[in-house]
Length: 290
Image (cartoon, rainbow, N blue to C red; front, side, top):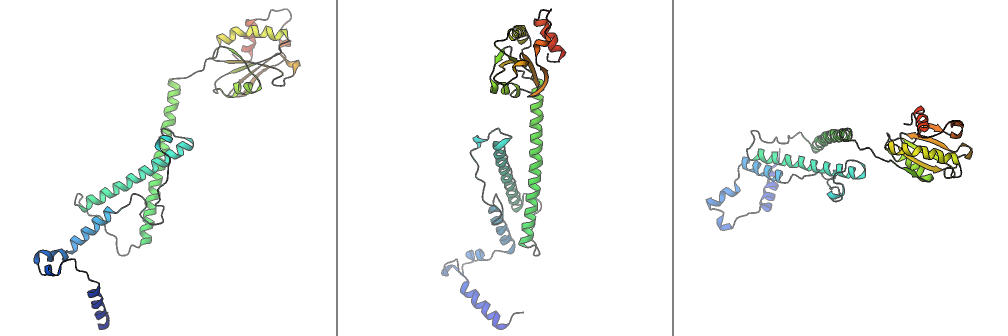
């Protein structure tokens, strides 16, 4: 309950702080009187319109990360789904979706204010504090983030399944059909930088050994007939191979897994039998190389 002194102070303060917006000669004009006599409903409507027009597209609370993320031009990460560019694309899509969400909220608020929806926007209760509003805002942001992550996960799974279907319906098998001579680094690249299904046959030879020449001659028809198998040859000194085990055949699959080791092939060639392509084909078949 206010005291007479308090009432007098409030009246004096109101008189000194009141600012007329009309010319003194127009104060008694009835046409201008209604401008200062807005009813409570009009004041409330104007306040709602003003609030709706000021809803930001980012965080509504100061200090809650209202600064926008600075991203490279969209052409930098266009069409990317993985790696660094994929992360940037995700960030760009997330911000775009987030802004669209805020725009939808603005449209809803405006529609409610101008009577396009049956119910008006609920007003903030007297018992609701700023902390409660911030908490509700944080919960809404967390729910939106979870929804975004789930949508992104489904999108990545769909892209991966589509890629698998494309590989199955339109297989791309590399064709070789030649005997490539490689050095030590080329030897490693040959067995590792291929698809997991590709079989790589490495012929370790000695240019001074007649048996090496015989085996290479017998191998050439197989190189042409089995053109999805990558045949390479490497000098034994390049890979520091034991000269006593030359010539040798090493077979790999699954990008570097040795599954057939035919070292010391001199011992595998019968002295009383001509060694040719048929003999080598049988030997390869015995070790599941072809």
